[in-house]
Image (cartoon, rainbow, N blue to C red):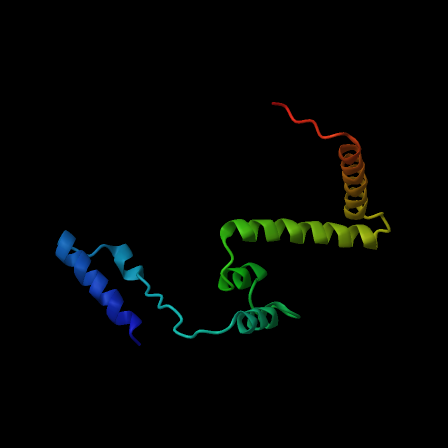
Length: 125
């Protein structure tokens, strides 16, 4: 309703500035901000419903709608890929590499903590 008016205003501004309206100016689109103030829970619920089952929107779109930054979305993509790999490995009967890495890391961290705790604190002055 109001969007077309703003597109026309922008075209008029281009006409004043450049004395002509370029062809690409007719592809202008007004995107108005959402005036509602839903809670995080309501947003997450709506996004989950749109993505679950037979998705209405892609997962990436839901993440954008929820306000995640590009960096956070990249991290989430990696996590999704890891999860898919884990599920594929489980279906093929292969051991989980995630659990093995976590266990090995935990063992190494415990050894390092015990080693550090057993050594006396030395203060260099």
